[in-house]
Length: 147
View 1 (spheres, rainbow, N blue to C red):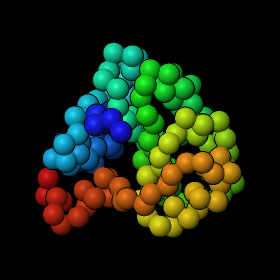
View 2 (cartoon, helix red, strand yellow):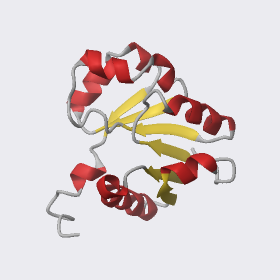
View 3 (tube, one colour):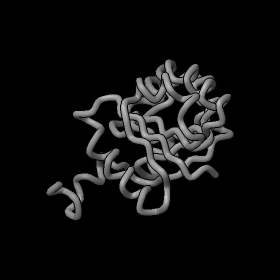
View 4 (spheres, rainbow, N blue to C red):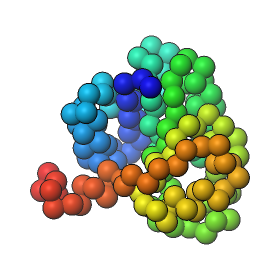
């Protein structure tokens, strides 16, 4: 497993604090971490060190980037932000076509409810799914809330 973690930030005002917490935690555990603009990472994936690209979702637009990144030796994981606010199964399936997960190896969910929901989906039958929590939610904990 590569020990480099690529953490793209799409919307800084919403995502940056939580992803910074995640980056610092990963760094404490020995990972080399690249935290930066999603657009910049997607256009420079060939020059980045091979590692785990941690996307916030596997929506329809992501599958072309995931395929290219895999071709350059990156592994794809998804920190599923899409189920923080639970939608119906039909709406989720409309946003996530089967091909969007073909290059994804790991999906990290914010809890067991999301994990159970995702395990039922045919597009995730060969993908490991782990309930880990979510860095945006973790920022609300007493331990780091003041930051």
